[in-house]
Length: 316
Image 1 (tube, rainbow, N blue to C red):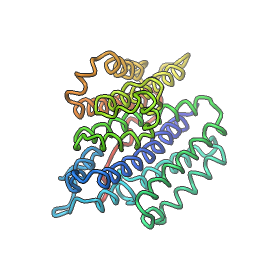
Image 2: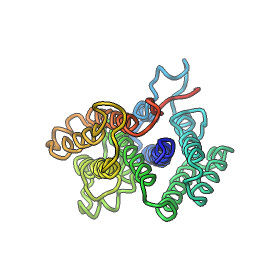
Image 3: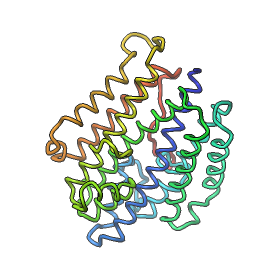
């Protein structure tokens, strides 16, 4: 497979998942403020922006940190590298580079979604409805990928990118919940943001507390957005792609992605949960760093360019 095609599919998977997860995080943030009066808007908004990689020093002096700023930077601002609109635009550009391989239905769905959000549709909608629109459009595109794209190496790269991004974004959600009030309301909205509330309720029979919620989103081997499941999925993709593949990228690159993913998975799976929960935000930051290193190893192994796109604030 051409490196250009492989890289394009990898980033289609990552950016679609990033748009979906960011929309879910936004909806969770707004729901928490409505449902829990003890949560202070400015503090919660500041924490969320920091979790999403936007520090106070990145903002112009005198910027008011509130819901309006959060909605702009994470929602509808096409110049903010952390926004859903930006992620959808990047997914479209990646699909355009692999246009000869992407199915017509997938391309049309991505392109239609981009034109809708790029022309202000999200900004004109209520925040909750805007988030749901993004989630539903990404779900539709994902369904078309499963049903119209051959499950060959290109599909493996897309699933690999999606899995790496899920590790990162679920870790961000957990970090935001732990740094916020940490109430049952916060954890309930966090589970809903991952689409996990019903699965969690069936597993734990309704016992909603930090330990149980964090354990489910971290370690449940069957829930598709848990950190453990996403790491296992990424490992499986790397193993499938590495099988019988020629060595590229110089000494030390072959197997590095598998080693990093396997180590992250083993440390999470076999470490006592109490140790992880003692500093959940710090542990989630380390998980994000490992996901970044794994992405870099994947790029060194299969892609022609040494640098991988990352989080950026853009022009604020």
